[in-house]
Image 1 (cartoon, rainbow, N blue to C red):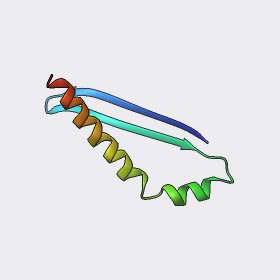
Image 2: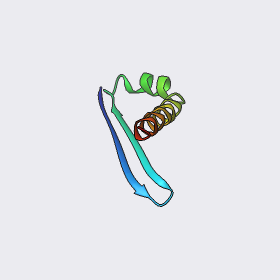
Image 3: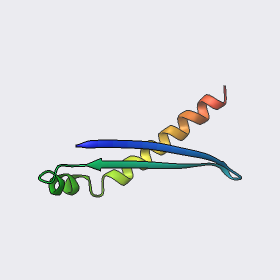
Length: 63
């Protein structure tokens, strides 16, 4: 398996636009199992990650 994750941030009029990209490549034999396990779990995990990053950054900026 290979994993790549990136954040792209851009100032916009309303605040900051954040784009989170996650890419996972599995060997052909592992792909069906990984897709079954990750389907439905990855999106909420990324949303939690963004929410926690936002809270952390807002706390750091208030100092």
